[in-house]
Image (cartoon, rainbow over all chains, first blue to last red; front, side):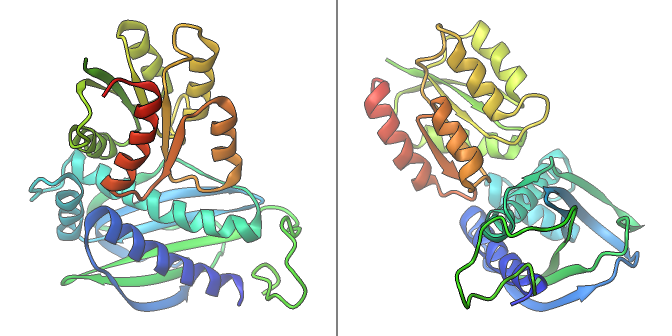
Length: 176
Length: 129
């Protein structure tokens, strides 16, 4: 299994677990793909969190205003109908937990990684772009009637060594 | 006798969830104080008598490990039990927290039952019920 497949599986598993545990919401994977860093117009909420270490990159969760309010309502057990600080904070924290879980799983293969403090953006018809020409592993989900996506890009920030050796015959995520 | 608790997390959402869970534990909880980072948390400790601390690790300004280290270095605070609640699942930061004297840790995402179970063990050892 190569790194993109490992990332895709880990994002799927972590997202399903975090939504179920923290929000009691079931989500299903609708699509998994690899995208180039092309800017795309977006409406709604996008949350970013940086990953740093021997490998570096970014994790992101993008969802509609409706789903952002649902996330907040389920998390805080209150009714949220418009975007406010609570909604932004709840979406940022969900991103932190999803990408944090992915990070923990990846560390078994890639070695120690650090996470930044998440940033969340809300608006209409805005574009996002990251530096470089990195592939993004994108997993799209459905939660009730709302679609959302979790993306992650990760590249070696220096010559990658096998921090944790794998046993003979085991497939290596780093070597792909 | 009621126990006053300090909840430290840069996420207001997590602080609210933990407040709710603490009120559901059956423990005699008095005031629940909040702080958004380690620096704010130290200020709360200076001005209030705290019986239990729940803290995140990854926070701006002063992270949970720096905060824990500062607490354990201060004789007036070093016996207060500290539970870490964090997305960190790796050995490095969690191991460091335990080495610094954390009484326990729960990994995010968490259920209310996981928090209650872990707190029960800590409270049994350190606090009046």
